[in-house]
Length: 101
Image 1 (cartoon, rainbow, N blue to C red):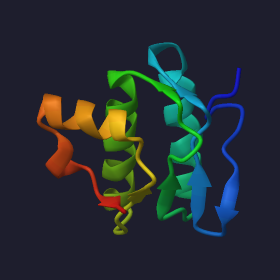
Image 2 (image 1 turned 60 degrees about the vertical axis):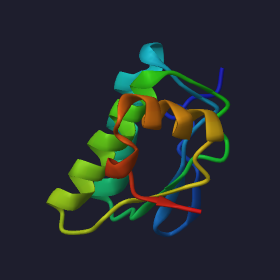
Image 3 (image 1 turned 120 degrees about the vertical axis):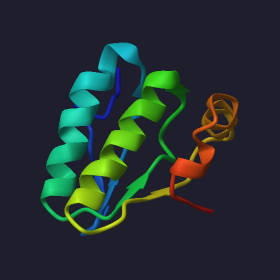
């Protein structure tokens, strides 16, 4: 199973990718892996590989954004899957996520 904890792949010096899965089961490890990347200077996360997710993915994305903001740099989210975008709208947090299309 491919998830962020096992596969935070850099697409550039300042961008990391999610894995294919970001669910309740993988959220804690994904959060830690992303925080490490943000601590290392990442300013964007590419969600293109993300095919399996639940509301935990939103919590992780928001936590990553808070961590980046605390470092004084916004975290841009790119290639957010349409289903996850819809879930963000349903939960009313879509305005909190910095998405670049």
